Image 1 (spheres, one colour):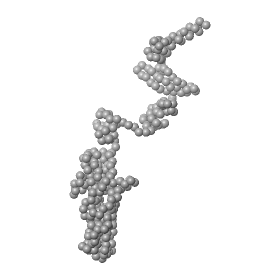
Image 2 (image 1 turned 60 degrees about the horizontal axis):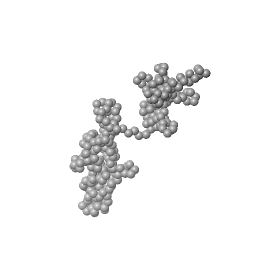
Image 3 (image 1 turned 135 degrees about the vertical axis):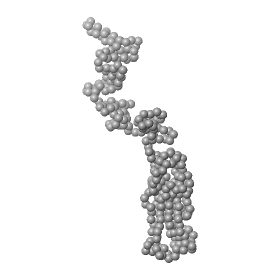
Image 4 (image 1 turned 90 degrees about the vertical axis):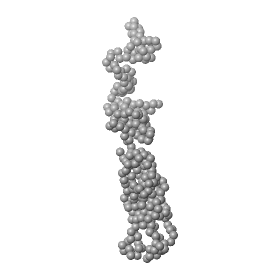
Length: 306
């Protein structure tokens, strides 16, 4: 009986209240609950063990090191509000998944990731550059954009080229909604696509002097509206006499320059690129007044090269 009382008293002292702090493995607890590995071997402090004894999670402390970890070969999962888990540290690989059940890389995020800005970096550092709303990576000795700037003008609701029509001939026509302002300086790949048709108005199939016909239609790109300095030209239709009826000037075959036109050129930020159309028309001496419009579908893409 005395032995039991002595053991109980010793246990109480081992958990001694020291200024209301409780110590386990220490007689001088400095925190509300202080746990110390008195053997100095495992470093394990508090552990919670599953009912089957196969899974344990807790802390590990050694001189100069502190861990929250599993004490068994299992993933470490993090959650709030008793959810199954929202973040995982995968056993073996050390991969971290946020919203991902089985991360396959060191960090896998099922959702968006927001990064901030910085002025210093080492290889592989990512940052957001507010000045031009771009993401950059520090590569070698400087910052480089990780995304090419891409711009497109002349797009309808379905993503196809915009459709335009006009009665104007033998003069430049600025196509609406096709003006583009270069966002940042650099070399750009410019892709121009356009297809269209002109018209023929005939009063006399044997005498052109009574007729009129659109001969050629072009799309031209100018910088800062600096006509006649053109940087890219594409024929969207042109005509020629059909050989069998050339003597009658009657049958015309319409052709389109089918392939997209492209160029690579350096542009300064703020450069304004305007798209113009030019329709050449041949008019007979006795041709009546113009009746019908020409038409074209056009689109221009700008890709900043790295």
